[in-house]
Amino acid sequence: MARKKKSITDLLITGIADKGKAVGRTESGEVIFVENAVPGDIVDVLVYRKKKSMSQAAVTAYKKYSEDRIKAACTHFGVCGGCKWQHLDYQAQLKHKFQTVKDSIKRIAKLDDSIVLPIIGCDDNFHYRNKLEYSFSSKRWITEQEASTDHVIEQNGALGFHKAGYFEKIVEINQCLLQDDLTNKIRNFVRDFTIKHDYRYYDFRTHEGIMRNMIVRNTADGQWMVIVSFSKKDKTKIIAMMDALKNEFPQIASLNYVVNTKLNDTIFDLDIVNYCGNPYIIESLGPLKYKIGQKSFFQTNTGQATKLFDIAARFADFSPDDNVYDLYTGLGSIALYISNLVQHVTGIEEIPEAIADANINKEFNKITNATFYAGDVRDILNDDFVKKHGKADVVITDPPRAGMHEDVIDTLLQLEVPKIVYISCNPASQARDLALLSKKYDVLAIQPVDMFPHTHHIESVAKLSLKTDI
Ligand SMILES: C[S@@+](CC[C@H](N)C(=O)[O-])C[C@H]1O[C@@H](n2cnc3c(N)ncnc32)[C@H](O)[C@@H]1O
Image 1 (tube, protein in one colour):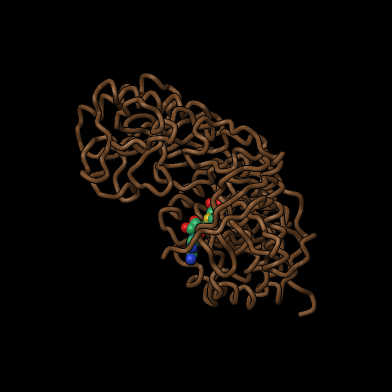
Image 2: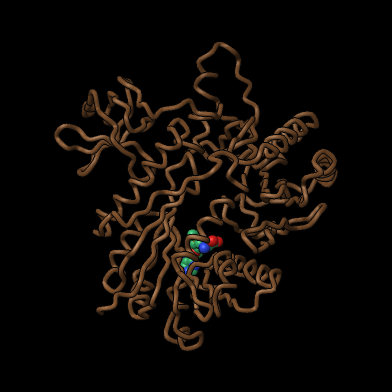
């Protein structure tokens, strides 16, 4: 017999936990994760999954709305799923992100949370992304509102974002507020063009339909890159669309297409054809210029990236004769950014294409004191590496969400580097690593920086210095 689901009434939502879920606690101390609620809401919920340490629940009634709730600016909010926190006032978002970092420092790193500095927010919490990836699908996501009307729903295709959890369903997007508005004009133009000229959208099951994906990138000074992905080499159709885009949008400095006949969407292993303009756009970060190629990785929020790198440089407090290691360097953006402040910087990154970009940008900026290695930090950062490159005065580390491997932490403990700057996009894994590093390093300050408004993501920079009494 199925167990009866437990309902809880008048649950006060008090905070936001990992992955951005709202969280409340019952009178008996049980922790409940709740979807579609924000801190300050009082809700009735139905528990649909129960585990030892916590339960998951869905709202059945809102008894009182939080004062921090606002009307989401985006018309696709709640359907698209991209900006889960748009209905939470931005200052409240910052407050909860700040608290998340503080909680991790206190509970996981077991450090005094007063080292966490006031969070730095985004000046414009919309239009902050420099890249969006749209998908075409023959299957449009039908909203609940549409489904509840008597109108006949035409099961037509869509151009927009994937519906979370449904790989073939696309939410039709008319306006996304995360990138400059030209992104909407380009996407909507392509949609109108494809409908008018009968370009069929990709069917994820039958693999028919010529239109697959479209990447739209821009720089702060208004250079645009568009890459359209087609499923077959129909030259007439491809050229007609490229010409239409070229004529309509002179802002597109780099217009490209790719023919992807594979089953997966990735274009990293394919030749991208530069139809007109350059195969790159150029972004400025401080004094540097970065060539962003068709396959390049780049920080998605350019404005906040500059702030982040400036904080890293301030925490490192470089001397001109410093030898620096930049671990998990990506396309070397931090290494290159700080290169004029130090003697030498050596970056390590496992993706060879990112290292190729790092070297291109090194040349482009005429930088002569940076060296890049492709490979796993765990393998590359060893005694031979230190012998070859000299002991580091400062290590900058910016690992992926999982944090650093324990072996890398052991190496950093052995190396006894005078200063470490640890940038992270995951407060929990950063706190875990800081706890291990604090055997030999004092954690002096943590600076949270909001790179992704309306999401639960938060970046934080930690300043570490070698203990004097070891
Ligand atoms: C958070 S990003 C750092 C980005 C970089 N600092 C930047 O600003 O462009 C983490 C990077 O670590 C790389 N990475 C992940 N695991 C790695 C490993 N074991 N060894 C080397 N690099 C790794 C990823 O490919 C990614 O580029």
